[in-house]
Structures are given as C-alpha cells and as structure tokens.
Length: 159
Image (tube, rainbow, N blue to C red):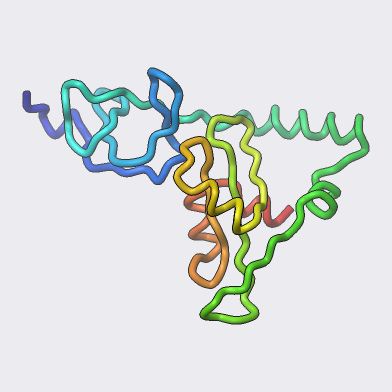
C-alpha cells in the first residue's frame, strides 16, 4: 500500500532517549516515521511496524519544587551532591596527553532524568545495554555534541 507523501514523514532517526515501544516501554533507537501524528519504527512505511511513543519530559516546575522541598528537609543541596558525592573519573586520552575524558550515563526508563558520572570501566560495561544511555566529553567530543546525545548534561555539568 502506498501512502501519500503529504500524510507521512519518513527517514527520521533517533539516537535513543526519545522514544520507547508502546507495547512494552523498552527504549527505541533507529529510524522512524510519522504517520497521522503517530510514530512507528522503520525508515519507510510497513503495515506491521510497531508503534513507538515519545518519552515525555518531566514537569520541570514540579521537579524543581520537589528538589527544593528535599533540600529544605534534608539540608542537602544539589551543589553539595555534585561537590561531595559525584566523583570525577578522569581518563587520559592516548593520543592527547593531559586531556581528561569524562563519562556519563542515565537510565532511560527513569523520570525525572538522573545523570551520573561514571568510570571508563562502567561506561564500557554499559555499551549496548538498552536500559542505559551513555556519552562522554573529551578531545573527540565536545559538551555540545554530548548534550545532543544526552539532553540535560550541560545543566548537570554546570551544577
């Protein structure tokens, strides 16, 4: 069956972290198309394609209020957490000495998004795990490039 081009948008691609399968909520990464304001897996139309749904971003006002309430009740602020509890795991790039590489991960099915800085070993272990999204910042990838892969990373780093 042929679908008119004014009804369908094909050839779109996601790096992950944007969609999950509607049937089982597992993460989706790859080509997708839009038909009648709904998203489906695949580069082109297929009658048996599975529907995917966009991951809704959490309500930032509600998240900020919850964070403020937690900070007041516990005396712990996000600044304290970043300074005291999140270690930095520098790795020296082989081709560029004295350049730090930092690795990050987040679990894709958890809202609100929680980004963690991780070691190179943990980064390597999480590669290919569909429940985790990973990225790094270093000589081969800027913060802006990493932010495209993992929205919210800049905010995490700026603390």
